[in-house]
Length: 82
Image (cartoon, rainbow, N blue to C red):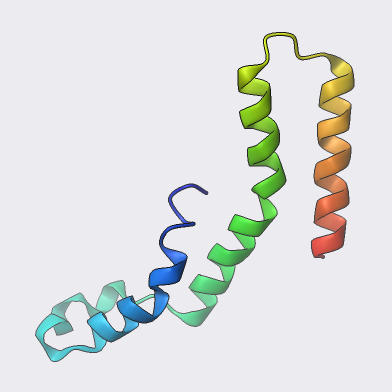
């Protein structure tokens, strides 16, 4: 996810770059609108998971209660996104 977030704003630039005749041999790298849509869903879908895992990595005492809270938050978020 951390690799996808900075690339998403570059979507228009990459299309312009790959449409340039100078780089025609790179057209196989062309990303479709569907690919960018999927990347956006991955970024948005895993946002709460990222927050929770960053929090847990800083905590030395993760309990079952924390794991249940994490799962409930992620499922609530995913239901809202769907």
